[in-house]
View 1 (cartoon, protein in one colour):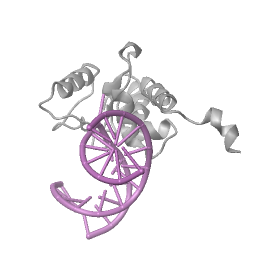
View 2 (cartoon, helix red, strand yellow; view 1 turned 120 degrees about the vertical axis):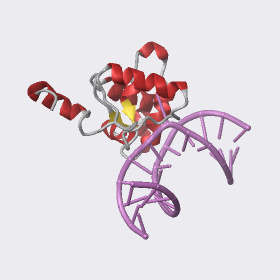
View 3 (cartoon, chains in turn purple, yellow, brown; view 1 turned 30 degrees about the vertical axis):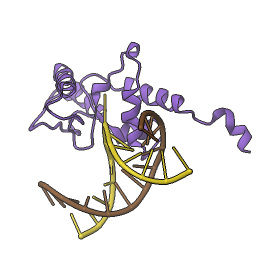
Amino acid sequence: MNDERKKTSDSSDDRYQRVWAVVEGIPAGCVLNYGEVARLAGYPGKARMVGMALGRAPRGRNLPWHRVVNAQGRISFPEASSRYRTQRRLLEAEGVEFEDGAIDLDRFSPGQALDRLLWGPH
DNA sequence: GGGCTGACCTACT
DNA sequence: CAGTAGGCCAGCC
């Protein structure tokens, strides 16, 4: 029975494709943490793989990698790094607010995005 | 083949 | 609230 799954067994590249698809589905102005992305991609518990998938993402894909932060709502880069500033600038340009260097994941999750559209920003 | 590292998470102390 | 411990998996010596 293993031979049947041989064709459908996930190669590393296919796993990245799935992660990228989920990330592309994050609407502007929203953020998800690595664990959520992993879960939505069908790999619960494999949050680390998401980070690697983003790092290995081709540039031509226009992947909104900046909409993925860690579970604490913080950017997973040293604040002194240029990557941190780039990610933060992109997020703030989309309306994501930082308080004390952290994002309120409940307020800026895709689920709450619809509420903001209907009820307006609180 | 083994060991370390890392764009991580959860649970517990 | 901070710190620790265990888990997870892909890359790179």
